[in-house]
Image 1 (cartoon, rainbow, N blue to C red):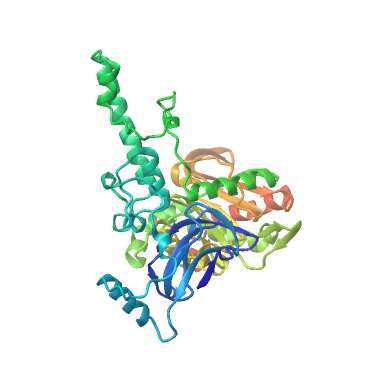
Image 2 (image 1 turned 60 degrees about the vertical axis):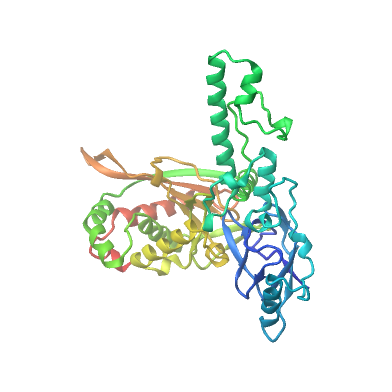
Length: 437
């Protein structure tokens, strides 16, 4: 047997959370085939298997957090000659050949839940978390529609089903009570499961308790750590982006036709930030082990909202890419993030973070620093506002840039100079030369 251990998930990261097992006990896994998803820095990262073989034990369930190096599962490797022995054995077992070899540890595939619907096949179809919820709420999973790949049922699917059922029960209760029905008739009308735990009956009928997903739990831990250990300071600057808005209007249609992806404002802000970090590398830094680590390369993380939570993929060497290059890089990262296909290399090594809070209409925010980075910038919604220019007033396209900084690493003066550099880049954008930057 070969032990599979929790991998090192990045600098200064000592723990990881099992997000989802993509293979179950008894399954064969090929070399480099995704084995599981691990939560790291607010993202699902697929971990491939380093060798081919049959999974014999899963030691860490979904949702549990363990230290780097912890044994999380065991695999019986294929013979050196290849996979033929394993595949032949599996074929014989499928055909009912009692002489076929059986991998050690297959007994771990036995279902953990005692719910009567939880047959052996369910351990492959449903995760332990889903089975636990189905038993807790007395749910027949055959009635739940899965939203995952190949109809896979997730925790969210189960909770949505529970919420819908509770809403239906509440409606039935109201209708029966309005007719003056007895309490026994009311109980008969509701779909109460006799084996549901008594503690689930909450006196506050309008409250739904939702267990946090592994993604949400990781976000909570990271943000709590950041807010409680980093002395945040905050500053904001207004930027006149009328030139940028004009450029966007002039070129967005032709850009889509030529490049095949939409042109947004984010690549321009990322480029302006990269230019500012080149001039003021103090912000391209981190606080680790009581020391300031200042980076020579500029890797900018971008916050991306997904169905499971916020993720931060990284644009490597952002200062060396053109606007067109940044558009394609950002598009590819966002697509992988929303499809759950980010790799460890996509999320590691960020030195600064940009958050596009303006995408949902925000005009002012105080972002929480992504540790161990020293700063994070949010670009807010572009709004038309009256602005005093000389002795007159004009309507201009204005955007706020908000910066949170780690006061252990940075002071207001250098951050102010950095923001002025970003502001100058965006306000003095040369429409004719912008694509060459």
